[in-house]
Image (cartoon, rainbow, N blue to C red; front, side, top):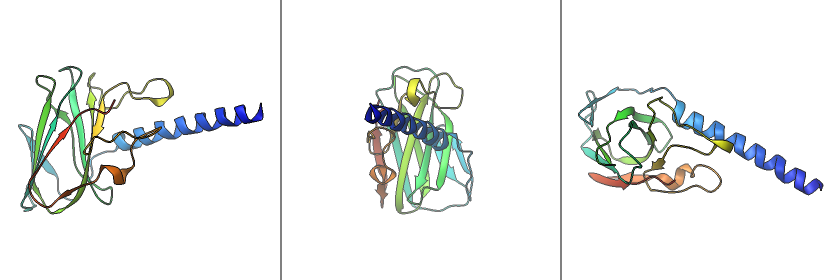
Length: 165
């Protein structure tokens, strides 16, 4: 009987941690050293001269409602760029990020269907809205590990992503 109570307590703690992680991960305000500009789903940096372009395509979306909220992080988990207004057409969305320097990055996104600016969570902190990442990795009992989502940008890259849920 004690072991069942212990398991229930651990489940509750895990769910609470997952809720906090999702809120922190997608609830941060945009803070950068140089502010990127988004125009026609093309991101570029006025003060950066990196030679590389990152083309992102998110497909298999449930519907065309709302927007895609997306963030680009460097290997140190520092936000490089973020937006919450990428348009969806024909169940897919594209964005291009220019002027990037060589490095290792992570892309995370969610489909903000109701345009409230946050990832809506259901029972036990399970996301109601679709979400995904640069390597299409599904986490076990929570979000994927940061290191599992990292990709190398040493030339122009096109990432094809799809929701993992």
